[in-house]
Image (cartoon, rainbow, N blue to C red; front, top):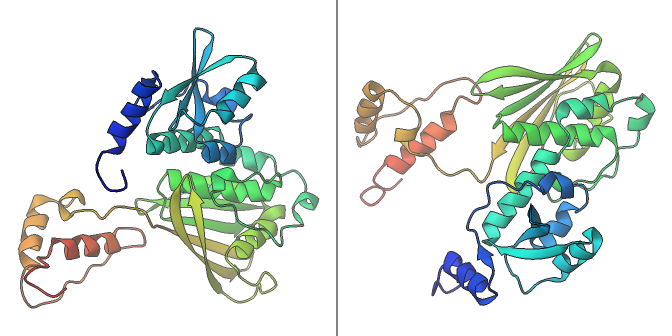
Length: 308
């Protein structure tokens, strides 16, 4: 595979044939997932590259990328007191299945908010090391779970911004999706400061400075998706307001034809950008796609005959 002498799919099919096992290139559903996500830590599943898929006539089928590595399956069989059979798939398909299964089993933002019971629970938040992937976080502190939940839910809904706005008696959390702010949840007012401090710690900001605006950044992984988070704090009469801008690092470059431009706008624009002189001014609100449009424009210009 490394030297492109064969494809990953053909290699996995050959492995399945050699061990006389079933091969499945993509696994869309795993009926047994909910039963095992609480039993098997995501780090363990990713380390040994296996995940239970379904029960079939009393046999537990487990997706693997290498059937020769049977230690984890054997341990699972002894723990469940059942017969385990391997189901071969590609490494990427298996990783997608693991991420998807643990993502769906994670507590919702509303559940995380419901677990914010007393202020005393949230006082110790310093010295936290961020997990490699937010889905792998095993923190039991409610505020950590809440902030992680806000981030992964925002990523799942492809939000461009998270707004945390203090108000009398409560704190509103809103996502900007397709340029429009949507209210997501309400946080109890008494834990607003601790939530803000948690985000400040993640962004390496001064938690003692509350009277001046601050800017910071943090990098997280959510289900394998790398996200650069730009954080701004703004003092208000009701407390500090937080705005988090989510920049998705792994997104593929879009083409102009896929941006949803009307034909009467797209065609003249494509002709215009091929001219040798002039300037293009792109305006719009935050998260409306200005940067995406400009990069799609650059990709549309003929790089072979021009210096871009």
